[in-house]
Image 1 (tube, one colour):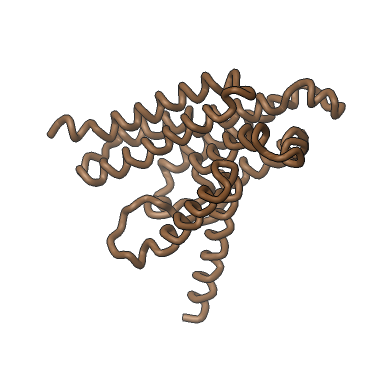
Image 2 (image 1 turned 180 degrees about the vertical axis):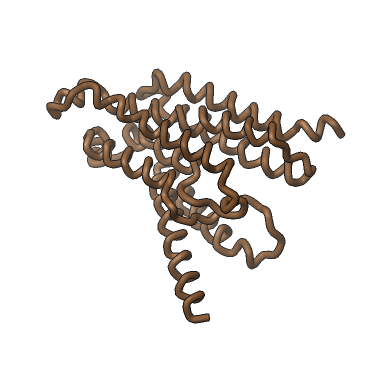
Length: 244
């Protein structure tokens, strides 16, 4: 039984280990291994989902587990996305656009915003069932999928992604959404009853169809759809509430 009680923490450490591997590949991704940072971030998020799932199942949630979870997420979903953006803001590209090379370090604003969100998440009692602001794992998937679009996308996508202004816009968007006061639905199972999960199930089906049709390249569209769906859902909830 004691082994089962430590299973959530073991999964959290596997999340951290996956993030460390993703970090290593993020330092040197190129035409041959551009998909590996995304793959290991996705694997880390898989472990991150199930550490909480098993902690609730075995009723072994603890303060240690909470702290381990945030520290692991800081690497997998905080440092890795910042480094990916840093690598994509290549000095040669910046100089081509006549921009100072120090702007490359603006990429790590995403890491700082992720750190702020993770610390705030542990203190915010409103986020036990749903999220306020974009979860760091979703943001990490959005950003680490960019090299895949760059190396696998059409010529138009390539030209778009190497534009520093687009990447700077993404940095601003990411930093804002991570800490915005916008409720977003959660995919974690914490309640009973199918009606509580109609929206997440519908979103998961949409995501599955997108992945089947377009592969991993559909990740940015899926994350943006997640944000848009949450905002629309919030609007209808507020509207229904005002008429009640």
